[in-house]
Image (cartoon, rainbow, N blue to C red; front, top):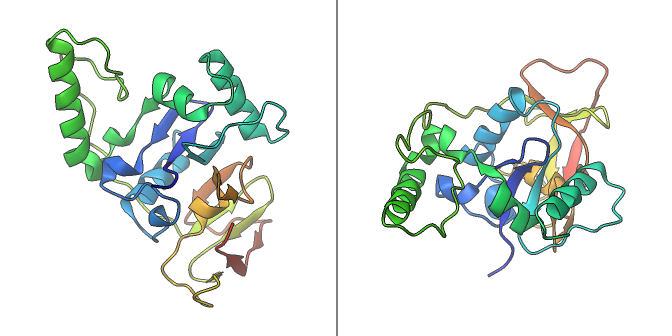
Length: 223
């Protein structure tokens, strides 16, 4: 079946689930340029998630206790708080909030999930996790109000570099000039396939070219 990935904000204990947008959960399935998951992510990076430690976490790869990577170290601390040392997937599922439902693009799938959850809770089954953090008496309050969006520039504030689809070339082994793939999931991935070059860095987005940052003219799309 392979690994499934979610976008995790370690600082705010929140995540975005590609499956809620009826989109693929595997690494390269989530890398299509302009897809609704990445537009939701960028909307969050431009506002509430700005300056936070975010990465694309796989569900099967353990977080090492001795990691010097700041994002992974913070995530390991979250797993300890959750009582599941190293198991980032368990910590995310049990103690992080799924914010996918903020976005209109996730309305169909999230509505079904919430309706199922409410039915189970009202029937007396308390075993189900409230992953969306809803009020059972008003379960859809505040949901499905936002649009995701794309930005011209994706920046790595830690490394002081950026890329844009207008100026950067995306290269992989099968397609020397790839116009359809967004490298961000690959750069931010942590899982059995490998660790992306930007894991641990602070990421941002903008429509204005960042001053003092270096343009990445070529990005290779392989971990």
